[in-house]
Length: 469
Image (cartoon, rainbow, N blue to C red; front, side, top):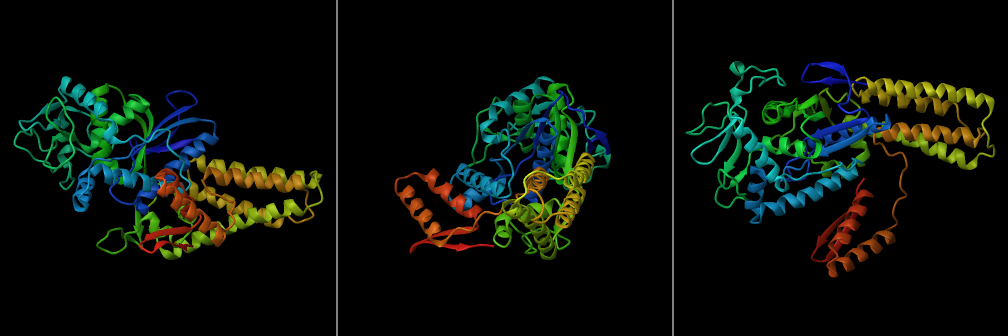
């Protein structure tokens, strides 16, 4: 299995630090709003990589955080006149719903930054003790970038050549020793959440959060650190400086980054009116279509989102699902049981599709080629199956298709559509749960209906619902 390592700019054979085990950290979202489809790409990509590693027999300790203290969260809270924690908790819940709709597996641990402050303070103190960090007069703690000699090794930038424009690099202060130094801890401002520290009451800088959570849940050295390519600099570069400065060890062996997502060949932005949340897309398409679309290109390639490409993904996914459904139908009506000699020979041919699929995934997780192999298998199945085949042969083909699609996180079994009365019954149950203050059950019912394409709207006249395709 080969991985393209951003650190070395080449594909390398994957050799875990501990045989049979993988320590993997993936930077998660900042939770101040519903996640957008740009957030969804790394979630889907690295979930698929995790699934493939587990298929290969590796035990993956998968950690993905929630950044639940940030300027954007504080701004959203002030606009609504509520606590920042209320905003973050709301959108963590909504994020988990969207992740579930996209069939993204729960992380081994989903740490929240606000619950790991002690771990951050410990690393900052380590850096202070080793002279990698210093305190300014106002209590801000900065990292001495130029003291870390390997700074720039991930982004392949030299300090002398760095351009202005990166948010952390623009931070200035009267006591800042160098313009490149970045914040580890910042003093509180009026009305903002804060924590006590040896330096001042305040909150952590963005970069220290991931270093602390990675060290706590995976150790000082990890196998894979991953995220979008927009995080390479300064976020991941600063993580390396902090972690290696504090621990004196190589932080991550392999660095993986997915490419950008564009909308109709333009950068996604609210000002251009081309900003889409996962929830927006799910109103028009089954969430599986979005997942399938994301896997239609290599994860390191830029990906263009458009209606035409989503329609193509919808049709492609339908071909796969229909093929499996047809196999299940044939399994039910066939009268033959045991496989014939000719069918055994055909199954020998089927093995080559799995080998081709593995070859694609072993080559830096080339999901585009892996999907192409599944289409080849669909074509083979459509040609070589009929009601005259044995159940054993048909069922083996079903298992083959399901195993390969499950690696990609694609669900091939369509759920039966809920009847209107079923929906009304669940809504009534939800109303009872809310009256009894059983909000967990009420949320579960809303989520269950959402997964099945039913959108609820609480109005003064009562609960209204509609189906979304």
